[in-house]
Length: 160
Image (cartoon, rainbow, N blue to C red; front, top):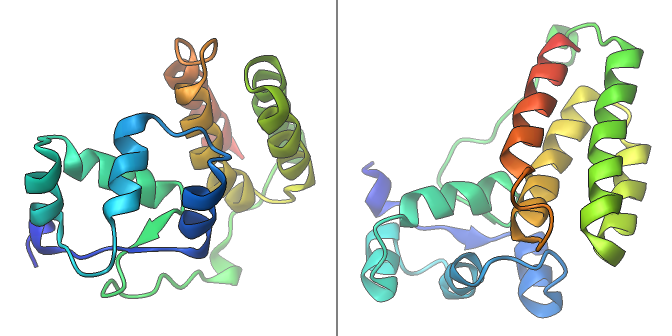
């Protein structure tokens, strides 16, 4: 199936985000999220928005857990294939995420930091990293270092 023929739906988190605006998404991502209705495919969304970057924006919303492709096969993780995790690396990753969230995200940072602190695995941190990164990119102060911090986090978690 062509990438432009994929039809996305909002996840529960996506529906909550439309209502609450808690992630402070950039206007272009919020507009796209609002337009995702399970009926329009990516090509139609691109035509509506007049945007060439819709594919990248869809990928960003999907990575943040706000939308999903209902026709994609479910991802099944193999618990016995999980790598051994170095707890000190996970703690450093948590610290990087929490410190930057608290420094740049205001009240959202406090909520996100609590979730990050309670993450017990590499997978949970990776899952939270999409929301953290999007919030950092959307923040007034953190947007300049968001991509650098994400690169550091990914390198760090590759060692975990």
